[in-house]
Length: 159
Length: 453
Image 1 (cartoon, chains in turn orange, green):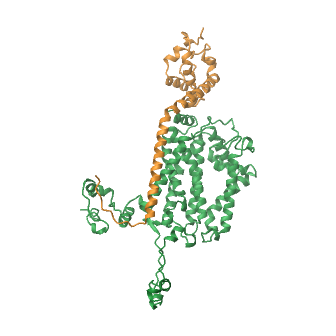
Image 2 (spheres, one colour; image 1 turned 135 degrees about the vertical axis):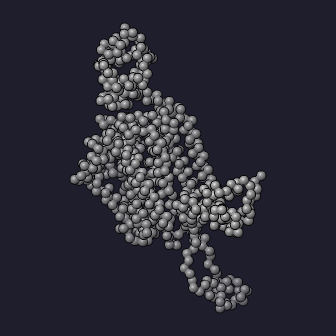
Image 3 (cartoon, chains in turn red, orange; image 1 turned 90 degrees about the vertical axis):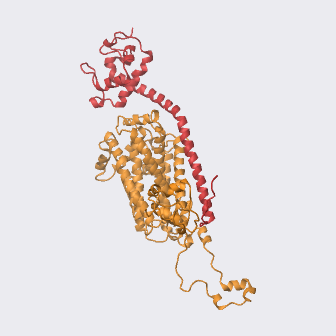
């Protein structure tokens, strides 16, 4: 049980104390709003993130597709289906064995000893990091429907 | 033993209102040397205790121990200056969080914005808070300026603090404008392109200044890096320094504008102790008291013969009255900003593309008035003379308007001129923000809205 403390005599007008109490009540209300705000956001966050990721995936995929056909199709074929001079990228053999990070490094840094140039700005190419990531996203999206092409290294097309 | 320890706790006679010394574990902790090395004041709720707590604490030392009672009223200042400072603090905190994930490079800035959305915990929320606080800060700082004008609070001895305040408004605008570019989306690219094009109209060195600002022929990587450096290093340093001077001056100038009793708040006058009734009046009211006669000394006022001109003490303790109000207002500001951030997502348009001009290409809303003016008048007049003139008039205002009276009825010209300019600025901004569509054609906001925030 809390001990009754001796209180000093009041030295301020009552209206002042009352208005202070009013403010303290408002303070409590605001704290509740803050708490509710954080909780609401935290609860909604996973859903929002998933939606945003899906949207980003779709837009990167489209942009990557465009970039691929503009810059890469000459050697790798339209829609990555192979053109005979460079590996066919739309193939299970390539996509199953290569991670996103590896593709990113290959695209931005190029492959020495081959005719694959470096595309990343850092390596004297024309693509920003974002654009390289878009190309990677596009290629990765091909994986579920990619055909099996044993001769993919020589640029064979699917039969 | 240290001096700190034997202040009030061991000398209860120093505090007449206090009768006992507390025992028990909390009391012992609070009396320990360790506790007293951090919290030097005893927590006594007596007039002396409150004063001690106030001036022996670094943070409370920002405030005077007592402040005029009228400052407590929300209506006195609407706490606009304080709210602006709170918003700045929120922006500082959220800004640091954003700096952790942001790279000022054209190639990756936009991707970072998307990463905030898809992969950073609380990322989008923090960005929303930053965005809405920034807009609110421009608004609140502007309102603060308007309030200070109408209160006449820029008059002697506060002239220079007004000048600093106007500069703080300029810094706030620059903050908002430089921050606008950082997401590198279509909105920021074109808002900044439109904004920096204004500089081009400056005679003689307009082109040079524009080159310096954007670092090239068009907004690009060097612009981004320049704006980023300004936004996260130069402007915060400037603003913190100026804000410190601003607040320090407010404190030194007495926290509140002196007011003659004519303009005093009703409460203030009603709380004044009633004048002692004169003996003549008392005799008239109660004839039986003195038998209806007035004695000689009764005619003399009861005040001492040598009257001291002492102002009525209308002050109250800052702690807790002002401090609690400030903390609650800060909480309220944070609550409003968070509610906005949870409800509305900060816009992110497509990646900045210099080849595709969005229609309409609008400047941020606080420059929309200027853009509207530009569409009607010669660029030299609308883009340079008017804004420069306005800033100059604002800065020099306390030195032009030397009338010391703060009552509106005694400064009609100043109030009228200011109100007219304010109304013009608001009308232009509203038209530019809400009523303009593609090709800067007139559009009714209820048919199609082109508001860009």
